[in-house]
Amino acid sequence: MRIPYYTIVLALFIFFSACKRQDRMADKAPDKAAMILQNLQGAWNLVEMDGRNVHQFNANVKFVDTLASIYSGCNSMSGIKVTTDDADHNIAMDCSLATATLVGCPMKHIEGKYFELMCGAYHLVQKENVLVISTITGVELLFTKRRE
Image (cartoon, rainbow, N blue to C red):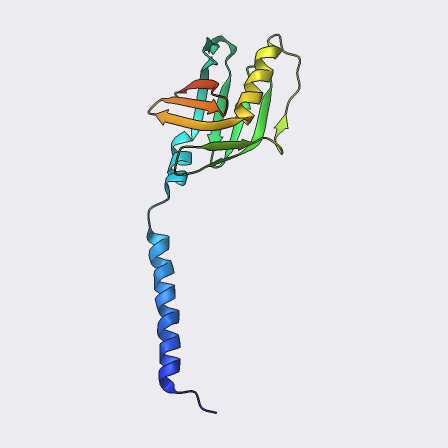
């Protein structure tokens, strides 16, 4: 049984068209979720937590690629997987595989709440040097970009 030549030509045409389409997709600009993560890169100092001024605790968060490290001024948590979506600036911080230090801290009630809120992050708004991360219950954490 012979395969007609036009069937082979048609199959090759479809194959090469698909390859070209993938090349064009690879050349496309990065998606909005990737841009959100890119804009977060660097260290951010915690200024307010749930409306209270807490800058004196020297707490911060540092984003590197898709990971975050949280420092409370005493203890730290690192290896936190960060994901965003491109529609509504939703954010998720997966702390399940993070590592943490456990040193006794004088302000442990604030530290525990800070870690809990960051691991429960749900939404973010970032404009220039200000970052607001909020939980699903509406509690907000206000950060300013650290000058490095």
